[in-house]
Image (tube, rainbow over all chains, first blue to last red; front, side, top):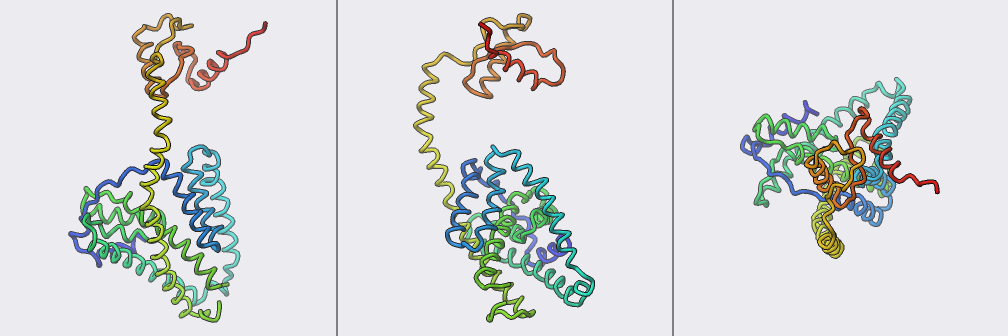
Length: 201
Length: 128
């Protein structure tokens, strides 16, 4: 990510745009933090039932962290349980990577497609931010658009670092986390909808 | 794969394009929902307004809560000014309260367990 994104970001933005400073966002209350996962889970479950299990689990983890009274469960979900799942997934996926299936030209095609997808995602995020600036009175720094890639928190950190190098007074990490997480939620929901509705096996 | 999307490179690219535009729609939808969240704060403030007014009225009619105890077991060697400061800090941190006991900490590093023990022993039932 730190190698792929910065050249694309610099190619699509001017120096003045990269130096745009952003004011601190409004304070988010505890009520909003607790209501967010509940509201999103209800809306998604009502309108997009095929992705209900995926999104509800995502929002459950968020709610465990934000409600403040399930500290033990939140630490378990974010720590031990997550590590166990990572290990199981790694071993399970790795066990299917037999040499005759993995070491093929198709694998290299998929990796190259992934790189192209990162570049297209980065560029589209930056261009979307520039389009939004045409209508907004308070301009946003287009670099945070590149954080729309759902790689938390690396994409946001790359946006922050590129902006910081242009203007040391610019600390965009919190602003970049917004599109970063929007990308996570959006791609999770849209991917689940697509897989369910199109019937991809 | 179904009949519309072949299981080929072209099918994968088509899926990516569909997902790309669908993501814009979904994220915009989430943005619209989030734009209504400041309204939640107003509703929350409106709901808690009567209970806050009630709490403020009862506070005004009560004695000041941040008073050091008249007799402080084990705290005779603590200056009254220090007792007043401690009581004021506790009142600022936790609001209405009643101080049961203040004493010098001479038990070592485990102040939290020491505080818990002192609090539990203060409510020990007496044998009659």
